[in-house]
Image: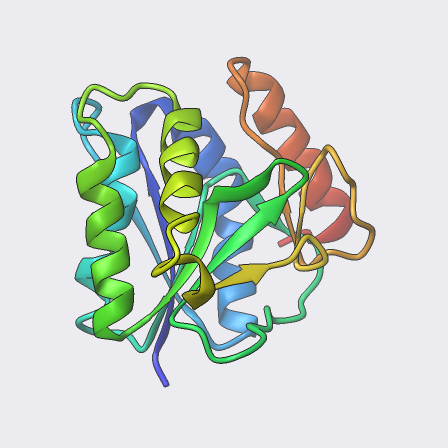
Amino acid sequence: MRRLILQVANALYADLCAATTPAMVRWAQLNQWEHELVLIPDHLNFGQERYRAAVERLRQFDLVLYLDVDIVPQKTADLVFEGHKDVYISVDYNGWCCGAFALRATHWARWFAETMADRIPFTQTHRTQDQDILKAFIRQPEVGPQVGRIEESQIGNPKTMVDGSTLFHIWANKNLDDTVRRARELLAANFAV
């Protein structure tokens, strides 16, 4: 089975990518994933492009795991997707989170990601909007039951600080220098390359 870790970023996140990508590539290799970082032009809509890039990669891979570039490995263990769903999305204290999702190479997963890309307004500038769109989409009775969860025990975050999570979502903020510093500290302490 071919599996891909997909990350999407633009020039704004260049320093963060430089800090986190080597560790994510190493984590992918340790767990038999391939890795690809897609750099998009600044004028493209980030929310749309993450889903479009994932759909495109489903032509070559059996499973595509999208991870924001502010997600870093904390231990070498692989992620486990419970159940038999075509789509898995990370959850945090605030509910469904667009920062990490997995798609199996199925018609339904492609439809899900294409629909999400189409629902995000091109003028969207803040990612909270695509999370609101995602939450509304999953509330639909024909969608929600078919979506699995990537639990915080697998992808932790600063709000809940789940100890022992495999990956950690730092949550980039407006002060990207601070996010880069935190990424480097976490990686040095837990997953030095």
